[in-house]
Length: 153
Ligand SMILES: [Zn+2]
Ligand SMILES: [Zn+2]
Image 1 (cartoon, rainbow, N blue to C red):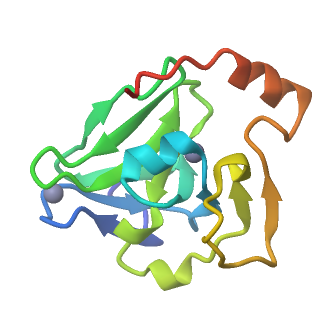
Image 2: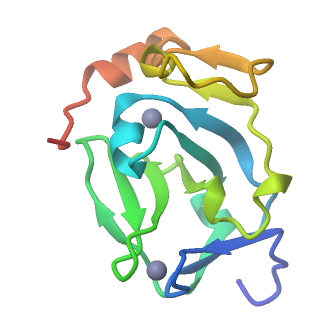
């Protein structure tokens, strides 16, 4: 199934041990300012864009995963430590990739800010795109996040 597919976007970690290909245009590009994403990337926010799990492949190696909460896992290169992915456990959830790990991050502009309840007061960029607090999108989202138990220390 993979050999006849054409990669639309590719990327990988800084040492090259892990490489990935998306067979669709990266979807739902966003900045997540939530506290968990800050901790996970060691930065002021995470930049993420995803694809359904059937629409991407690892083309070299595979990441190691840290279960950052009871609801999600975050992938990283076990050799160089680059934060690579975020995904909720539900099967239909997208695998999100860090925009900075794509080969052409300029082609993946963000469409949304999430987790703005934790947005750092001195962070300002792409202020013209929509913004939403964690769990504020819908009652179902609020219910989902109410069950979150962090494994971060
Ligand atoms: Zn690496
Ligand atoms: Zn987040």
